[in-house]
Image (cartoon, rainbow, N blue to C red; front, side, top):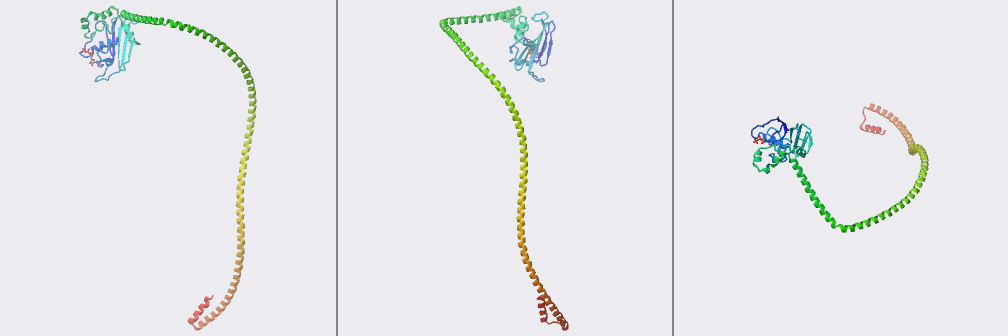
Length: 388
Ligand code: ATP
């Protein structure tokens, strides 16, 4: 088994997707200080399940996500995939190549995959147990750790050698078994306590048990009596139900007959409705005619009133005309009388005028004869002329 490939996306200084291929033999990563060499071993330990942000040289887990640079903005998640050659089947899986992937988001959500299948962190830890590969195993030794391993006490180095010897798995199982044993022992102690408590309660409980038995006997009798009562009630109800059924049958027959009657009635009602509707129509027409006759009558009445009024006016006018005719007759008579009196006057005047003309002719002759009239003659003539 050997490390074949490492892919990093958004992990610390590796903002872009970066793929590192490892071939059998030694691979060295060379670069100036701060160029990101240790970030690679951090990525390997992280993908193998490292949970401590401090041992990844950060304050919190979010610090491993690329936080941005002058030329590139920060990303929201990081992902590391580590591929191991498993041709020797050291890892207990039926694959010649095993890829473990870990992804974390700024929200804190974590995801783990083995060969692109979602899994738990525990599955990854168990997969690498006793293989020498693991976050605490000897395969990954960071800066300064060699010194630590060599200088510290033998007990501190024990975990490293246990991992190499392949007994970590058994130690973990033993630890779990001892834990379970402890829990079982504690449960036993609790059971003993409960038992002694129960023993103390035995006497009062046996009294209670006697009472309970008596109660059960009485309850049995009660149940039997109740059942007898229910049976009796059931019989009564059954008889009642039979009677009801007969009544219901009778009522159903009556209902059928009633329904037939109702149907006949309905038909009759429909006929009557039809007839009533026709009558309504006739009535409607008669009402229309009555209305028009009434209107006509009212018009004629109005016209009769007009004619009466006219007749009254006519009679009055006739009366007036008669009175006027009488007056006119009187006036005509007066005028006739006047005319005849005027005629007489005219005749008299004509006679007088003729006389005067004669006189005038005589005077004219006298005037011609005497050339001029005296002023007294002129005045006298004027008065004579004005008389007419
Ligand atoms: P040295 O030899 O001095 O130990 P190195 O080559 O091992 O250095 P690392 O310590 O692996 O380098 O890398 C440190 C670099 O990684 C620093 O430039 C640091 O800015 C960068 N870095 C660490 N975390 C992040 C992060 N979250 N986002 C961006 N860059 C990061």
